[in-house]
Image 1 (spheres, rainbow, N blue to C red):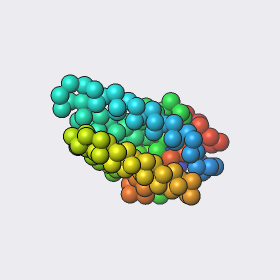
Image 2 (cartoon, one colour):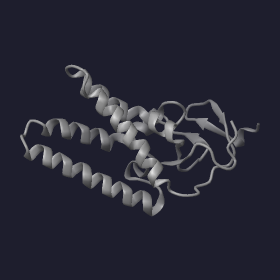
Image 3 (tube, helix red, strand yellow):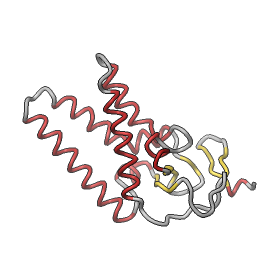
Length: 165
């Protein structure tokens, strides 16, 4: 298989695929994948001491740079994060940290707000709702959420016409 028909990991390595094309914005699939990842991150928050919050935020930050450009949620749903400029280049850890930093910051904000009874939880919940609405509107508009724009990435389906592994 020629190199031009392969996905490149940033820093080397190839995964064979065909020519990707954006056939839709996959709003439902992306939402389900992110929900799975947030549930996994939330489960990690219950680990004792500071290990829980650190591991929960760390998972969200690096999740899209794992497993060849997809998090556990994206792998289950069948999506992959790639470079927006070069669709054959997969998301790496640096891009994953950039694109998911907003969610990690919201996890930190949520944990800080737990110390303000009622008002803190309301404020943290409103921040989550606002972010979700903005992200959904951006994805619906052109397929790139705020994190994608910051990291220069986009999400495509794992299997579509042209993919062959």
